[in-house]
Length: 166
Image 1 (spheres, rainbow, N blue to C red):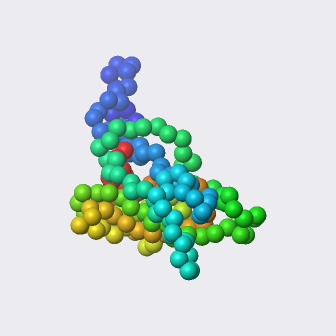
Image 2 (image 1 turned 120 degrees about the horizontal axis):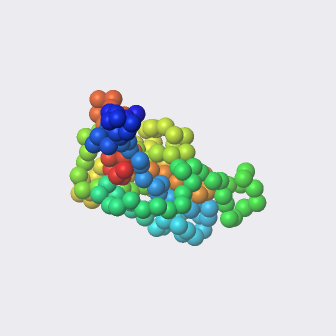
Image 3 (image 1 turned 60 degrees about the horizontal axis):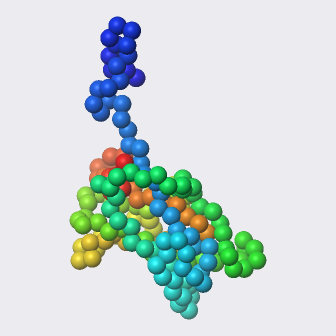
């Protein structure tokens, strides 16, 4: 809405009056194979009971310039390069890491279709002060993923892109 009218002109340029968070492009990783490292995957390890997929650490983007890249808007594509059907798809414990130089008041979550667009306890990150990093791991099906980090302030304020920039 315009904040004022001057003759036949509608004025929209009041600082902060017509702005909203634009968000950022989603992070992504390709876990369509558990036999080789693909996009944004640093390492894959197999134990007796499951696979562990370690993503490359994500960096604080809050003060970085915006860049445009193609993404799938936070969605998940079930893919697997090994096996013959979706019923044979494997699962892995995916380890997320967000480098951040200090803890924040409130919580940081991994967010997207991989969390069913919810703030799940599994997606809530833990801060490790010595390493200056937030981490969590989420059990996921093989495929191609987009995700973002959302900050949930204390006292019921709405989630935002504070740690990612906007």
